[in-house]
Image (cartoon, rainbow, N blue to C red):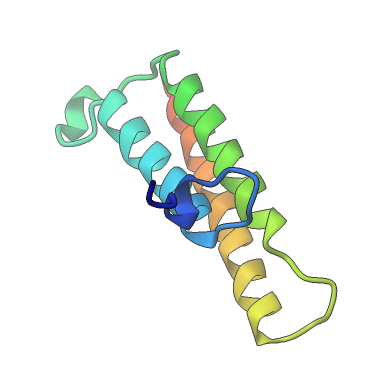
Length: 97
């Protein structure tokens, strides 16, 4: 039986999993808000599911932080700030009138 790729092993850390969860949640939230047509933007409570997936992506990215400061640590910190911006955009789109 072949081993699962690292992205599907939930007990191990994976930056790719965190990034894909966050970006996928952001793309889904934009589609749920009616993004391509700027005149029909609206809030939808289904976007709360996308918000939950974005939070999961943030947690997965945070799990990849190491205790020692390095360039890797700085890169993961930058990804965490990106995840926070994604969360802010999703919250804005949920409560947009």
